[in-house]
Structures are given as structure tokens and as C-alpha cells.
Length: 263
View (tube, helix red, strand yellow):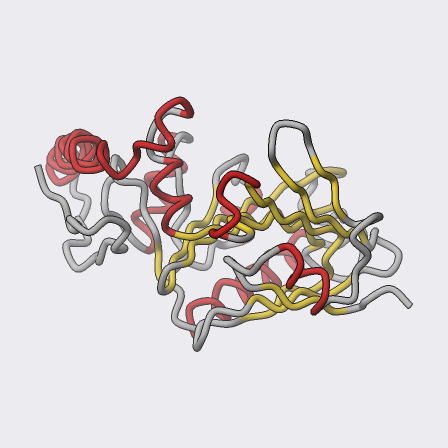
């Protein structure tokens, strides 16, 4: 029988992932000539699965999962699976009323917060929180992250076009994106797909630099973060004059031995 629930742990080997979830190395692994192994499983929407993400006291569960993919670099096999991509429905139903979807997503945000997950802002983004962060997103439409500590109204929920909610806990990071399709009318049901990207601090560091520089990210980290934070502080200065309140209590995740880096 196919597994209805999987347990994942970032950094485990592909072999461990397969064994603990009773998967087959032939049908559930896509080995690419470029040196990447993709560990995959697809439930589909008819009988979705559940994924339990292990992260010490910050562990949590993702329900209504459609598919999962873990990536392993054969040149860095000591790092194990470096990231997981998970796609899931927002509820068990394929189509759901928008307010039901909104409430289900707010519950997910609250679950992560209760498990100790904190907001992970991009280094070049202003430190805003709550309603002000959401308002800034609506005004600009380009804010890279949506506030994890704010429950949007139904009207605000329908205005979300793109963006992601970003968290960290310990050495792990999660980006959650929501895609809406079907009817955009408030009182008519639509379809929702959640995309979870789960990765560690090494991958967080590599994402911060150009693809050609990924292996040198530790050397480049300090200068890169200083440059981005100068951009952040310039934006914050303008926003303060506009009446925004900067969240100076925001705690940056520790990624590099030199963190926290300041210009």
C-alpha cells in the first residue's frame, strides 16, 4: 500500500528517506546526469497524503499533500537532502469558498507560530510586521514577503496576487506560496494550491548570491548582506517619514558565523 503519511528530516540521506517512508529506489528516484537526485512521491488530489516535518521542538504537519520532492546533490552527499518541495491543497476539497480557504491558511500560520517558527525577512526588505507589513505589500505589490503575524480580512485575502510567507526555526527555513485559480468572485468557490519550500541555512546562504557563486557564498556573505541592509535602512527611513513603524525587535536568523552582519 502507498504511504498515507511521510516523515521528512532535512539533511538525511536519500537512502534514509526512502527506507523510513517505505519507498522504492527505482520508481521514486529521478537521477539526473547533472549530479542531482530527486526523491519524489505523488499522491494526487483524489487521495492526498500527510507530511510530518521533523525539526526538534519546531516539528509540524502538512495535510492534503499532493506531491513531495527532495533534492540531493551527489557532489555534496554529506549534506544529504538539502531541500524539500511540497505541494498541498489548502483543504481536503478541490474547490473551496474563499473565506474557508482564508481561515484554513490563518490556522496554518498560527500552527507554525505556536511551534516556534518566526518571520524570515529578506535582508533588503524593511522590517515591518502585522497590519503595516500587509498594507505595504498592498501598496507596492512587490514586497517579497507577507506578514506571518497578520490575519487578512476576506477583502484583503482576495487582493493577494503573489508573494510568500517566510519562516525560520533553528537551522531550517520555509517559504510558503499560495496560488489561487478558478473563480475570483468572493462568494464562489475557487481552487488553491500551497507550495512549501523547506531548506537549511547552507541553502539559505547559497540563495543569497548568484548561481555561479553558490559554492563561495560564505566568503561573499558579509559584503552581500551589508549591501542589502543598506538598501533596507534607506527604505525604512522613507517609510518612517510616511508614518510606518519599523520593527526594531525583529531578530535575524543566524546563517553565517559573522551574523548578525551590519553595514
